[in-house]
Amino acid sequence: MGERRRIVLKMSGEALASSASDETIDASMVERIAVEIARARDELDLELAVMVGGGNIWRGTTGAGAGMDRATSDTMGMLGTVINALALQDALEHQGQVTRVLSAVQMAEVAEPYIRRRAIRHLQKGRVVVFAAGMGNPYFTTDTSAALRAAEIEAEMLCKGTHGGVDGVYTADPRLDSSATKYDEVSFMEVVSKDLRVMDLTAITFCKDNGLPIRVFDLMGAGNIMKALGGEPIGTLVR
Image 1: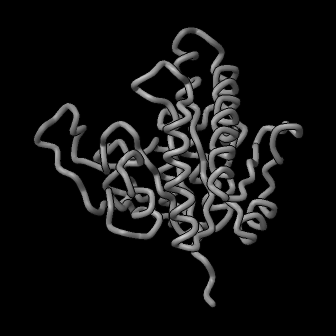
Image 2: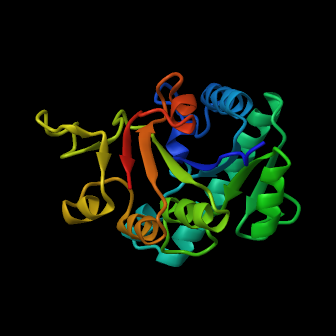
Image 3: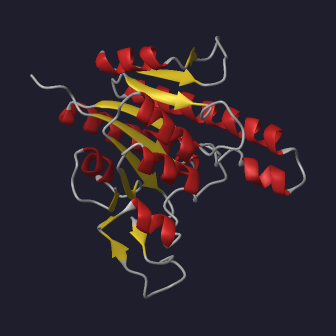
């Protein structure tokens, strides 16, 4: 029996909210995503880790833009990701997936501390690992944190699920430019040179330097998580 594929799924915090209500976390949205993740885990026999953002609760850049200290604002954002991680853990466990939240900020009563070897051991035992609190440092996005964790645990790919209706990487923003066309595959160099908004530049250059391919896809489409984690040519492959 060969080794199981190990993948990190990056999802935005906004994916857990709902445009139909004012709720920060919409239980039905969380459940829908958990059902898809559970199905993919079961049918594909993957080792799966999830990095969740915190944008539905707090964005560090928003606070900084309003005059708040950037480090403080980013720390608030990290704590927001912990709330999301706990919501996702609860939903995944309702789907029969044993799940562990590993936080980069120590909070012993709430989550395990992130320790690289512990994360890998959980994955090997078939548990879903949810990374919380980014990498524990201000000034870094959860995209960069997802890339770092993926490299640390030696994942074969980083799957970035978007939620704004954009289903991959385009030549321009398709919401603003009707002539924008989607790439099926694009190189890291092209992403940088053409300033294609895939992830922030720190995350892109990190993935490039560490040979970590990224699949960008629409998280919200039914069945898309399964397709992306299964290696189907969905969205855009950046490598």
